[in-house]
Length: 276
Length: 334
Image (cartoon, rainbow over all chains, first blue to last red; front, side, top):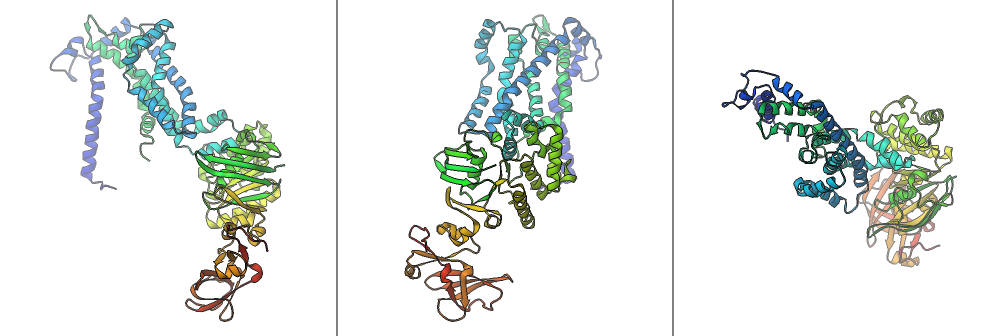
């Protein structure tokens, strides 16, 4: 049903969209503002919004106290590595389920998703013990494996919905043209699914980047990504709000920039298949 | 070379037997059409030959070699799909060349063959375009180009013309038939349109509920249908079927007469009835005549006859053209 687009309606919806957007964005804005405050201003009640003594000393201290580049690099390796491996496993899996479905395909997909419903802390002890016995604690490889497995259900689901939209005829045509399954995926399926694969990749990178439970529990320094870097500022000696904010701002900056430039892909990826 | 032989090929999906057992032999260079109502298994049979579906039982021989366990890529057949199934991210050139690239043909050779195929199909000026920039007819020609360029053992066509408008369909029909004759490549063509079947085929396979009802030349099917189903399916308008004393007199359960084999007069001997509808096509007139005790009979008469709705008509079937069927619906040899 087409609704009438009156001026009032446009104004009202625009204003409410901005309000909602601002509410969502406010914590991030507040964090960024706090990172430029002195520790004293960061605490003050009533809170100071814009009129405080602006300083960059927090960033200097953070740089001094810990190695941002080391953690950032770990984040890149963990997010990138787990995403690539997940993709390598998920493309054939989603291909099989999308194009040769059986009676149990739906069930398999639901089962995969159900693993995401379990709180990760439920398997912390067994995984921790496995990591200890296999010498994987504080190693990038171990963490890549855990992050990859954790996000695999989502990656498979997203690719599955994308692949479902690709007409089977086209893949069959490629098969008749002499393409093996591998070539069919590389030359036909992947190029046709590029938008889908790109947004899946992006979402998975963000999820892996933000993952804090496993990274905090399974690493200390060598493999520690930015989440650990942030957490190190909430220490027993007390909370350093301003420094914590500075560290957090530094940690989310890369992903925020990537997200900003690829928001179109991201929205399309998340709502794909929702509306036919 | 490209002979295709089916030996008791069976296919079931779960508990449903789609093809309960089909055997036939398609000779090299022959144009064979699978025709039948929708859901009769004709597309499934084609996909079994292509290898896109696995057989449940039986053998498929291409040039005498059993290919049941050979993947579609290795069977040396090419297929034209109803939806054209062009690769949307590739240019026309890329689409036609894809099969050759997969066969690792040298680039110069690929270019030569693609240009040649494009020339034959009037696609030369569209080679760099993407499929979405083409009309339906052009897309269909690209799909055909993709099929011929590989010089396959046989072409498989799965209702290739059903997405085209009527005028284009007739043109493409002629073009495909001409191309097939020129190349001399075996072709298997699936359609539900009996006009396509009759005009294009060397031989027609009539399928019904997964069974091969008859396999023969178009005229054989028209003149000597093997059973009631084929008799009713081939020919337009449909054959008239008459049961009761008229049939028993000829030693049959049912007799069939085609509308064009009935003479109409205003008086005399024969089935007497009332014209309920008269369709005037100019070249022909179709009369639907209500005959008491028999039902509606269709009559096709050349030109204009001057009979109108409500007039009385006397129908005389040509005795030499009456088809007789027994209680099982099988034709009785005369």
